[in-house]
Length: 155
Image (cartoon, rainbow, N blue to C red; front, side, top):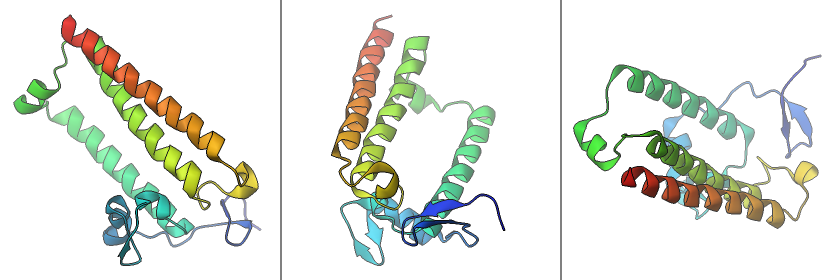
């Protein structure tokens, strides 16, 4: 008997993922819409097995940790500081809101179309309302980015 695991909608039960997909061609292929050697409009939301989901999370966690170390050690390049000036807190807030907006838009597509990550057993079969809420929260964060970016550049 084991404790833990993740719900697999294909077998309708909780299971351990013991062999996650770590192949970069498979994982990063989702970013450009490649799934099983063919292109799909859904991109990342076309993932249909837990091995790829967990492998993608492992990859993104390693990338985020390396990026955090990079940003601690290396100051921003001059050309980046020209594009994204950091003169006050409004600008830092605006960049954070832009990242939040991007995640809101991506998760809206996942909620609407992906039954592996958002199983119908938990979220229902008609998830349009949930996807719309996520989209509108992403849009709100984007408008917050625009507002705070404008205020930051006026200061």
